[in-house]
Amino acid sequence: DAGVIQSPRHEVTEMGQEVTLRCKPISGHNSLFWYRQTMMRGLELLIYFNNNVPIDDSGMPEDRFSAKMPNASFSTLKIQPSEPRDSAVYFCASSFPPGTDEQYFGPGTRLTVT
Amino acid sequence: GESVGLHLPTLSVQEGDNSIINCAYSNSASDYFIWYKQESGKGPQFIIDIRSNMDKRQGQRVTVLLNKTVKHLSLQIAATQPGDSAVYFCAELYGGATNKLIFGTGTLLAVQP
Image (cartoon, rainbow over all chains, first blue to last red; front, side):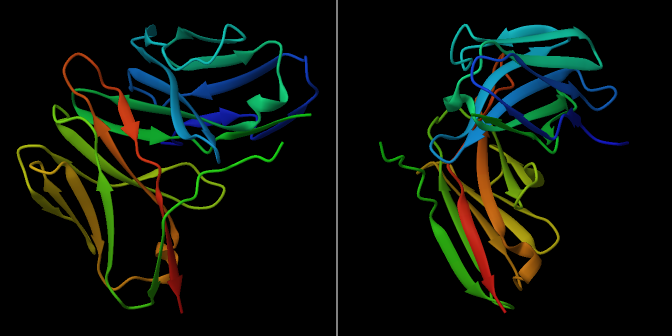
């Protein structure tokens, strides 16, 4: 299995632009998680989905952030408009509870907003 | 203004020594715990897990200890190697109807050759 796939790996954009991050979970996993990691706040859960349905989005910082999961093999995290304080590494993870609660992380997308 | 980042606790050990990384968790109702390893430029990688009905679990060169009385978790790495250098996170699963993992702030393990 290729593991969790994220794209792009690096994104540099200007303030005000729309940013879309993409994730393909491990095949067969029915839970998907979006995290943000910064030096200031560490690793934060933004939102997670079970069976393509958003379950907990309490970590989404603002209305500028939105996430979708149109099918079991694809999810997007969108920031519109982007701001410099959104600069971070964004991770996607997937799992298959109750078989396992272990979350498998992708390589992350490093976002820089100038 | 000046930005203030997280000051990660750092554990520096000599190659070949044993390492012990500690973690305090927050929720007494948490029933599942995971240790993750994150190398520079990579995503967190699963090391070992433990359920709340256990107090010890062993893997290859790693052991996790769980003390529910004081809400404390530790990761022991035997014969630490340079490749073990990374940030280590503990995570707790609140359980119940959620599979939401809450991560600690992490500990940087630096292995000196």
